[in-house]
Length: 608
Ligand code: AGP
Image 1 (cartoon, rainbow, N blue to C red):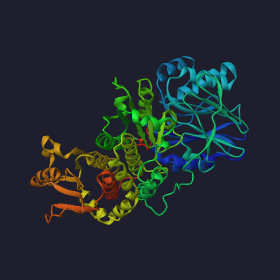
Image 2: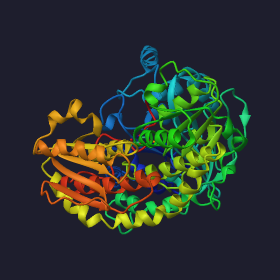
Image 3: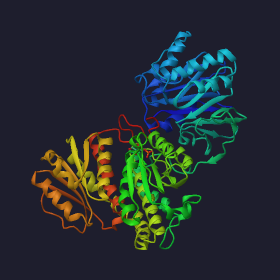
Image 4: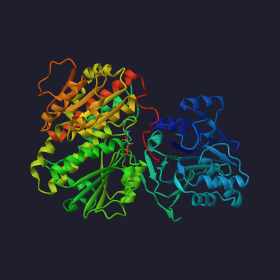
């Protein structure tokens, strides 16, 4: 989605802005732009459709040098991807960049046209630029004009503004879209994602919902939505030490798949005792209240939702607590019935997904016992707004397709299940889970050695347009995740079914042109799954089996089997995720798609 970078310094800030945009490229965008205040105190704007590299080329033709500037990558919502719609938008000596959607842009646009303002784009953002110019023309006071503009607009936004009359000042605000202020030595920055600024600082102030700020070389003033001046403390960014390069890998996705053993080690570090889990890490009062939890609701989107679906099986089987799981975009708009003593869990890699965040805010008024965020970004909105937090330590995930974020979410959820089982005296599960978690990183290393066999297998998908994924029990959501991975990066239409559902409809699709991928660990449902696979085989389906090594391989040439080591049931969903990630990656290579930035998708979905 859109990205914002801004800087004020005593040196040329254009290289900082460009590097910031490059670091935000992974989020998905279609055009980019920059506005810099030149030494002649004039705004110079340069914009380009396409990659940041195109903007760089445009800047070679029109160099922009200055000490104050803002920059943006746009992901079109209002108005097609085109240079005239790219940000920054200008009006009477000021420049604005914006993430989010101004919901009342239509009446404001009409009002501004009546006042004589001329629009040069179809965007909702240009309304903000003209509105601000209008308020400024009446008061000659930028702070007051900015405040008045914020009062006029409704919707979701992160905004950054510069004005020719204030050569050392950035203005910014956030409501529903993330924004951080970076503290450098003798210079300051802002960005929609701290990753954009790790090139210059690891110290950030996180703005709260409704905050607005005036940032200069020597001061940083922040006001809350009630217009009270507030102190937003500086915190150090946790993942600063992680490398943001692809290193030896061809794509970030592949690098992130191979980082999973370490990501899981980092996620469980400090959470396990000898044969129990350490519950103090959950946050104030959580430890004592685990025992009170009578029900659980889990809300998330996409891959994070799949993690929640796996957890439901664990939580109900091991802790005996009823658990329901729902996608955030549905949950947030319906009337929910919340039984007494229900814990709400939100799961998110980014902690900024608009629907998940809105679901958490909606839940706050529904009488939950507490809210818990499972998240990979310590300073994110989700983490800051939940009562309790459980951080995954996957490190920054750049590939749009979620890989290490998912498996670390599963690990965090298994840890949580263990804590709940422990609180309820279900000791039989506790020691087993703890042992399994300890051994998991090494098992993953072993499974990653299957890559050459999976690379070969991927060729089978070269000319396919559809695929089915089948699983049972905890491996049904893993099949769903496998199908999502395949469709998002290879553009092959893929659907997942609980294997028992096959003969209730989808079996009609099976013929010799349909690859059917099955996730077949050696668990109590294996025999049932085998019968389902026979149904596929009888119809000439091309079966690809990810199965436990203890299962006798078949000599049937229509079945391709990849064997995985035997593991405890509880960690099996984590392990079986890996070959599916590798399969989708290698199919995408065969198809020649843009693996890390698949078409139409954004890494962090900060609008509805
Ligand atoms: C999965 O590969 C996707 N990138 C997507 O489904 C993602 O999991 C979803 O948008 C939720 O994101 P979050 O975990 O950051 O909230």
